[in-house]
Image (cartoon, rainbow, N blue to C red; front, side, top):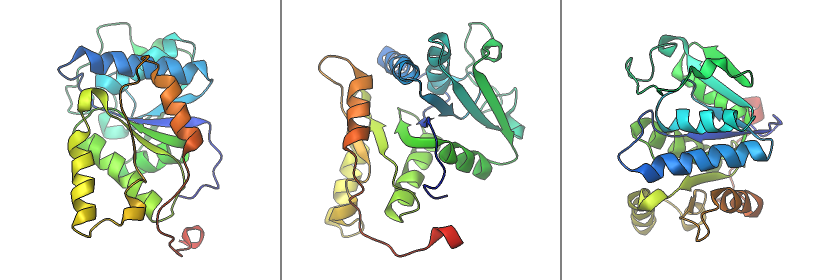
Length: 217
């Protein structure tokens, strides 16, 4: 993947569970509305489960466009085969939802990245962390130069911040690469949309330069 693909989507990584705090849902809803209000397509992992389903549904309710990328094995059964589906009407009834079925998790992640101009991670588990760190690594390797943002809801990503600091001090992450992943804390006025888009506008690739030619890969 390179930046040659022009996309108007923003990729959402988040849990297939709701989480234990109401604020997680509240922020997910706010981000869905913020993206749809700016006519930006929400790109996510498909389905109607957990926080990622909350983002998608809130965007759709606000007349926004949503693209869900889902592996065939997960169609109709959720991330664990028993995901926490919304109790509201079926998300597939919204006309602005485009669901794309792929054959593997690897295809899913690539398809999501190709359709997106930036990446946002909300609270989540192993899958969310893996996706977030993968696109951050792609940025480090100059596979893309798109903003990568972690929404630090109620300090959720403080341990990841600490890990990066430790890895820099231990010599495993260079200081230039430490800021490839941007963390956004709770805004004073509660306007998550503004702080996210400010971060997108201010983002400049600052990592070490690599000379890999990914266009020929």
